[in-house]
Image: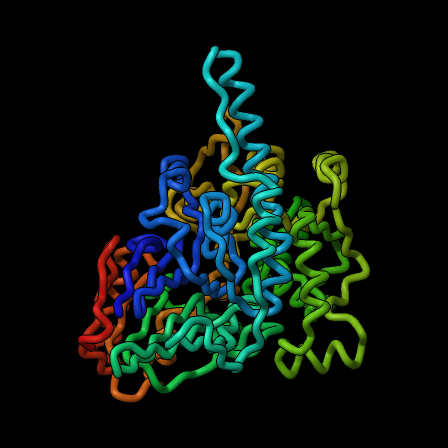
Length: 466
C-alpha cells in the first residue's frame, strides 16, 4: 500500500500520482506539463508506468495541468474508468477537445517549418478522436457520496472550491487487515471567493497530499483587490487604452465576469465594450450556468432573483477567429478577456502583439504564472517579449492582482490542514521549491505538523507504515 509522486514535484503543472493498493493501481490526476518549450516537450515521453496496468483514474478537477494527458493515457492503452465530479466531467468534455485541437494546430504549424527544412513530420500529442475516446471512460460522481471503485478502495469527493466541480479526493484503503485514509487536496480554493462554496474541511487522514502553489505568500485582502481593480480601470479610462486580461477559461473568467457585473456601476464598467475572446471560456460559462447547485448562497440567490449570473449588457462574445482579429482594429478602448491564462498560447498572444508596446494599454494579471511562461515574464517586469519570432517592446502598464487567485494562499492552506485531528503526515506537491520550503516550515511551526515532506519525483510513501 503506497503512493508514488510522478508529477507536479517541484513545479506547479503535470499533476500525477500513482497509488498501489492490494496490487491494484489508481492514478490520481494525469495532467499536462506546461511552461517553457522544454517543459512541454516532456509530455511526449513515455509514462513511468504501463497505462494498460492502471485499474482506475481519479481526477480532482478539469484544469489541463491535472487532466490534460488523459487522452494520451487512453491512446497508449488505458481502458479503465475515470472518476470525477459531474461538473468536472462536463468541463473536461470541452477542455480536452480544445487541448487536442491546440495539439493538432501546433503539429500542423511545426510541420510547415519541418517540410521547408526537409525534416520528417511530427504527429500531434493526441487528436480530437483521442479526446473523445478518453471522455468515454469518464464517470461522474456527486460530492459526499462514497463509492467503492475497486475492492478495498472507497472514494469520496468533497468540494474544493477552486473551480466548478473541483474536488478534494478522499480514499479509504483496506489491505491485509489495515485501513488507511488518504486525502489529496487537489487544488484548493480560497474562502470567500466569488460564485463557488468554500473548500470543505476534513478532519480525518493518515496522509495528506497537499498542493503548495501559494505556499510562500498571502493574497491581498479581497476588499483591497476590489479597490485595486477599480483603480486600474480608472487609470485605463483616463489613458483611453485597451485593458487586456489573460484569464484561464475555466474559473477565473467566470469570476471576472461576475465581478464586472456586480461592480458595474462602482467601477464604471459601462465605459467600455467588453469582449470575451475565447470560445472555450464561452462554453465553460454556459456550463457554469447549468450547475447552479454548486454556487455559494450569494451567487445562487442572485441567479434565482435575476435569472442570470452576469449583469453585463456590454459583453460581447468573440467565437470565431475573424471576430478575434477584428478586435485588433478597434478604435474604441475595450476590455478584452482572452486565454491562455499564462499567455503561453491562445488569442491573448495576438492581443499582446498588437498592444503590449502601447503606453496607453493596461495588462491585468489575475492568476498564477508558472516559470518559463510569457505571463511570468510580464509579471517579472520584462521590457521585451518574443512572439512568433518578433521582439515586442513592453510599454504597457502591467498590473498583478493576486487577490483574484482561485488558489488558497499560505494562510488558507495552513488553516485547511489545521482541521485534521492528530496532525497527520503531509506531502507537498504542486508548488515551486521556495513556496514548498516556506509552507513546510509554516505547517510545522503554526499547525503542529510533525512530518512534512516535499515530494521528490518518483518518491514513494509506504502508507502501511504511517
